[in-house]
Length: 122
Image: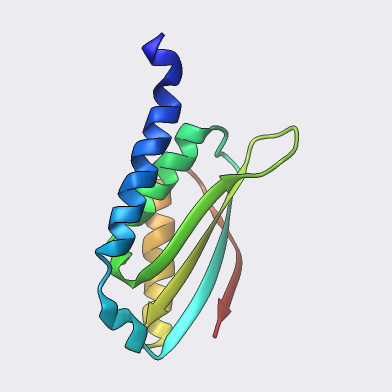
């Protein structure tokens, strides 16, 4: 019976960890000159455990300190797939490019392929 609720328990744990992660973010990010919004399509994501794995991979990537907000979700429809959206704060557009590369690598290392849907630099 416990195993039946395991994905939901992992989701709750990751939600709590995500809130803790956001509180621990460095407040110096607010002084960065460039912000961006990145949307990634992740066609191989198919369940809530996949969403949790993507979220954890993003939070633990090398550029995690430049990510001010992240979320991922499953897309609606008959097939598998999902999306991830990140808010990035950096000193330059080159640093934003590095963050995007690190996020894509982290998702790939988690076992998922991703495609950049959009990158909007503010």
